[in-house]
Length: 367
Ligand SMILES: [Zn+2]
Ligand SMILES: [Zn+2]
Image (cartoon, rainbow, N blue to C red; front, top):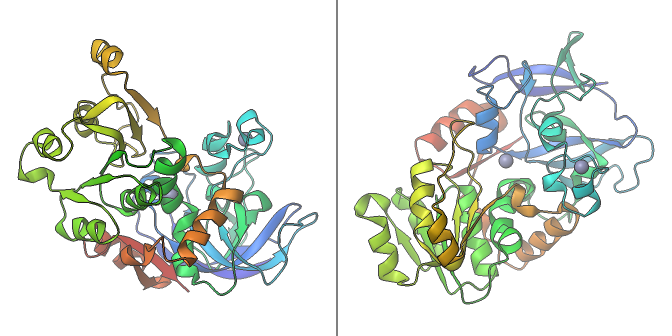
C-alpha cells in the first residue's frame, strides 16, 4: 500500500475535497500508475450527482495519464517506467469484448460507474475505511491509481500527457463516433450538435474522415470559433433563428450524419428532420433524465431510410484506436491543444466552475 492524495466525493453533489488516501498494491493483472494528468469529463460530473449509481465516498476521474509505478502478477503489456493513458474498463470475456468491441461490454455499467467491483472490493482506503476506487477501472482524480492491464495503453514517452489524457474518453468518443460508429464517408455532410470536448473531437473526426461539409451547432461564440479553427466549414448559433432553415441554407439535402452530444430530447427530435436520405443520427450525449426518449415517426423513417444509433466511447477498441489517434496527434492532425486548459490538481473545484462559466472547454488537471 502507498499513500496518495485524491479528490474525494463524499456524497451526492458534494464538492471535491483533497484528502490523503491509501492505494492498494496492484493485484494480478493490475497496474499501479503515478497519475500526472487527468481530464475532467462530463460523465464525472453526472456520476458526482449519484445518477449513475456511484457508491460514495468515491474517487472519480476516468481520463488519467501517467507513469507505471508497479505491476501485479502476470502483467506483460507494460513495465514500471512506461508512460500510459487509462481508458474505460471492460470484462474481456463477453461476446462484444471477444469481437474487439469492448465499448459495448456486457458488464460496462457495473465495471465503470459504481466504483467498486461486483464483489464490493475497492483499491482505495482512508484510515482503514474503504473508498470506492474502481471507477472506470481507474479512479484517477488521485496521484496514484490502480488500473487493469486491459484498460491501459502505452504511449510514446516524449508526448505531453496533459494532451493525451482526454484521448482515453472524450476525444475517442467524439472522433470515434464519426470515424468508427458512423463510418462517415469522404465528401459527406456532417452536423455536430454541441461544441464541448466531445463535439469538437467529433469535428476533428469529420476532418480526418474527409467530410466535405462540417457544421457545428453551438450557442457559445468562442466554441464556434474553435470549431472553425480546427476544420469545421460552418458554425451555427441555434439562438440566431430556426435551425432547420440555417442547415438547409448550407446543405439543402440535409446531413448524411448528425452527432448529438447534448442528450437534449428537443434537440434530438429536431435533428431527425435534418437528415438526408439514408442519413444516420448518432446519439452520444447523456440525457438529464434516465427515462428520456425520442419519438421516431415511422413513415418518414421508411421513405428517408434514416437510422438512429446509440454510441458509447465512439466504438473504440482502445488497444488499436488510441495508438491511431496518437499518430494523428503527433502528425499535428489532432489539435486537441486548441480546446484544453490545464489547471493544478488542487484547483479541481475552481476548474469545474470555470468550465461551467464557459471560461474553458476541456479541463485537464496536472499534479
Ligand atoms: Zn465484456
Ligand atoms: Zn468520459
